[in-house]
Image (tube, rainbow, N blue to C red; front, side):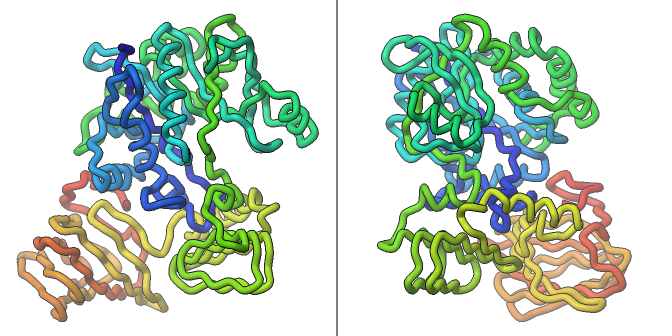
Amino acid sequence: MFPALQPVILSGGSGTRLWPLSRSAFPKQFHALVDDLTLLQATARRCDQVEGCDILAPMVVCNEAHRFMVADQLLDCEIEPNGILLEPVGRNTAPALTLAALHAIREGNDPLLLVMPADHVIRDQERFRAALAEGARHAAEGRVVTFGIVPDSPHTGYGYIRQGEPLGDQAFRLDAFVEKPDRATAEGWLAEGGYLWNSGIFMLSAQRWLDLMQRFRPDILEPVQQAYAAGKEDLDFYRADEALFAASPADSIDYAVMEPLSREEDACVVVPLDAGWSDIGAWEALWAVSDHDADGNAVHGDVLTENAHDNLLFAQSRMVAAVGVDDLVVVETPDAVLVAHKDHAQDVKKIAERLKAQDRGEHEFHRCVHRPWGTFEGIDEGHRFQVKRLTVKPGATLSLQMHHHRAEHWIVVRGTAKVTRGDETFLLTENQSTYIPIGTAHRLENPGHLPLEIIEVQSGAYLGEDDIVRFDDKYNREGRTD
């Protein structure tokens, strides 16, 4: 038997090339793109069995703003994680993995860490598990293992790994990491063989990672150790100290450790992986891994086609019809529509960057915004008013709060609401309503077993989400606007 295998899911990405579906407040790993599971859920379920290994529950390192979505999605697929670690600020994958390694050894254990991005697709689970079993054999001997994707095209968007001499039938010494090539170079490597795409999936023991960080990047290790030691439990999460964690330089696993280590003989191993992998890095990649109709179209949602071929057509809230067009990406969401040629799908990121530079909300939020208690969705807005639909999960409670600049009217359309308004507490049922004056402390709860739906009409001089003063919050969000 090998040491226990600890899956570590890195969930810090924003997926801007998949705008408008993927946005910074709700990025691609939280969407179901290829089946009924979100990419995060599929990743968490991927390692349910590996020959020769006891499998621990997955550990997730995520952006603090996404913590409740991670917890909810794991709960939805009946996974109790072995820790949800919060990055107070983004510092790339090397500090994130260091947090995970420190958490893994906290009780004197030293498991093998299987490090996986949260947003990958792997179609052939049996081949994936076989590759993991081979990787565990080498990682248990102290080597650092990475998994290289067997290329099926001369892709210029990935870094590559050059194989060295074989170590049995299924693994090779890692000869070198190679930067993203131009088209001609990638075609030459594909014809030559021995070059693999860098998947960003790694396996090594937790203590081995910490020892390597001490050797190569002590400037990262020290502040992350301090941030972890000064951290604290917060509900279902472990929150590293923000100021100490922010003092760490930002760097990736590849640059911090893997590239310098790969120059040493017998230190790194690459296991080829041919298992229907994709990082869904852009819309054309989603088209490639999706099921196609007889005309080569990949369709999601309410879509009609006529004389249209090889398109990706994604409808979220309305019917989309495509007539006489080929090789397009059309993505419809309630507040934005993308139309792009598949050959230019990588450039969608530039639109997301422009939206961010212009401080437009479509960069960060969807019309439906997730909160730990449920969701709210903008329905209409105008001068001095705004209308929202609130959906409150059974048993959930909004914070006790007040607003300086707006009053609110609440109308119950489904379920039962428990309302606190000043010194009063009362119940509202369907078709009943109440009014919350400006400056009045109030709280909304769902005491029932079914979702509660409320139509909220806000009126006032300022209607921004930052006009919230929280007095009490079961989700520990005092002083925050999320």
